[in-house]
Image 1 (cartoon, rainbow, N blue to C red):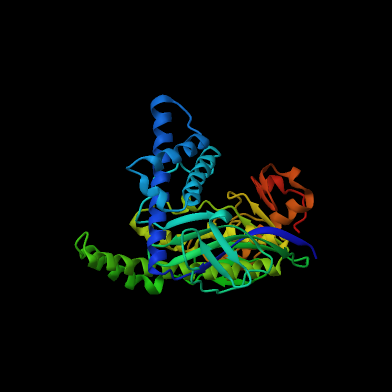
Image 2: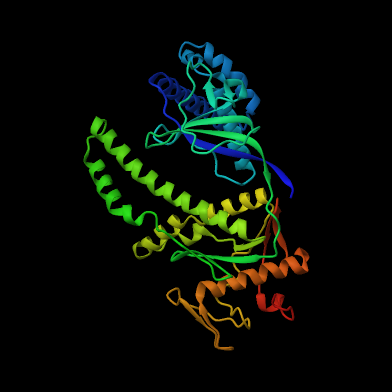
Length: 409
């Protein structure tokens, strides 16, 4: 057994005092203002003068802003939170230039509010399990829903408030995680709407459709919210009511995804799935496809893959992602014969060998066959598009030409 040292976030809900809530609300507003002001300066400098304003240049302006009468209130909150806001902007630009994200946008008050603190702006008492932020007198009243490992090294924390007015503190800690014992199990995963995941060994995970039973309640709450006068207290109450329903849907979805991905990672050494184009699957289609688009979004395929990847990295597992254009649903998992299917056809019937199998299970068997073939014969056999950490992304073009004469594993 080996030990992996990883950075892991531990998120807890807390209930601030009136004084803490007021200070944190001011901190959120100041951090948002600094972020937007810095973004505006950098954007205008490039648009008007083609001048690149670096993160260091903007950081030097922060002390000058505090000295002005207009922005003197920035001195009332922690300077660390303001500097971290500028660091987040630099990260956003780095991701944009690295083609990993869109151009940074201005932050809005209606969205999730947050502020980050480094070790210089908070104290952590491990024996008492108490966290105290800078400029506050009392520790945060945290609901410790799970324990932080003894000896965990906390490097930073983020305090946030979601639209449902719930307060959270997320601590980034460096912890030692023992890897799981290796086994010889390999599994292919076919993601779907009717069933969230179908594994090549026959295991099925049902899609709970988190929003279905709350859909009627959500529609009624949204209609009631639309009737409220803008700027009134009743409208704010109805906004929170709508936000709480959305939060309940998201919480149940995340809980199910965590349970499913954790079980898959614990039971299998090699996990193989497709690189799905979720944006393409949910684009256009008109009103007749609206229900399908909603179901695809509710399944959260991208989040499912993200959870699999980082959990596999933690516990010493391997994730292989095959190219999205591989026709896993059209090929017979027994003889390799190709046959086009309508979306409504849930049973695969091979015209060549007579195989009759569930459509999703047949696709999962094809996915694991491709992944194991790549692992057995090496990435050099196929053009490798990307490989990071323990996640391999493999392009598979014409399966008839590329896999001719190769035994199905």
